[in-house]
Image (cartoon, rainbow, N blue to C red; front, side, top):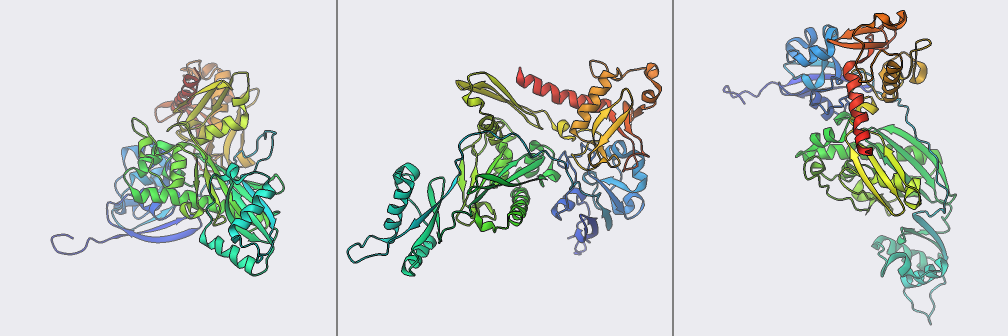
Length: 532
């Protein structure tokens, strides 16, 4: 409230994106990036809105390039956007509100190409969820054993093991399930199915439901999520799906995302909400494909790096980002659907796989178990290449592990024309004997994904355009004509054009710059240092 006692006038911002239009208001000086994310719009910002990646491109209207309705163009925007500033484009994290504004977001990269298949290990099938069908005798005058003890006795006999071997000294069943048992017995129901998760009885179901028994497993990566529906009764994988991690608008790497949530409980809740919503969406698609209900899914198992596991549980990850790098927990956790917000059977469990440390997560533990290297006599080296590279060396006698901050170059982030593995992303490059590129979906080029930048740099080195130290040739005149014409200069640095503006979907040159090669070298060096 100013000296006149009048309330500060709010700016009206109309946002177009993700197939919807939203009109909202915010005070002058508000960050456009913060407003977009708070309004539920995904913004491509690998740096987490810190102004360093130049990816949060939006088009604005409200005067020339935003005019009096937005803050003046920054030096960073001039460097990143160049001529596109004249077309009304701005960077959301560099822009603050000065008046009413209309904003258009680019099409979301929803159609991602993500690897979800692999080679399964052979071995005994030991599902986490067990279903035991019991045929109970009716109570009798000469046997006044309580219903629960009668059920436990029958359960032990079918399982052919003592209950202590399965679940310890006692079994906890909710009052609701106790009531269900009583009503079933008093109602004359003689057949019940006992559901246990990890040996602990969690639910009772009338009749024989043993053939309907499902679980889900998720690998939550920093960039992508892979999910699997497992039919425990049939001992098979029933379905699989992949999706982009919906937390990407808050940063391409874990440090950016932790920085976004640090000392901000509201942002931590938002980080948790978007990942849980994304997982619930995949669960709903699984249930529909298998023609079951979410209540037929009794367990959800999760692997991921330690930060992703913290965000899934709604735990602050602040300690992971600063010395001495101590997480809240790396223990294996059995959580209820109510605690996690997961849409599975209300009596089921969400299982968080154990990690090792702040930067050796549950995904690394899962990788060791799935490869079986912990059982081998021979020494094995396991490398998980991503924004954070985890490396494990050892055998059945012991293992050592480390992590390396490779950065997001392998994911296409941190690269000047980098994109995720979306339709149009350049994923393959060949320079000789003739120049050609391949794109995901075989459409017009929209950028370069991780496999594309690796391919491109390898080809530039093989063709002599880049030397062994990663430097572009100072004089490209010795190159064949078709390649020589593609060597150019962008923003004061040497570059090689993979797709000209007339070939790209964005209308701009898609190129590999000297800085891009340095980013890839840094990522490669980090992994190599970890291995050594």
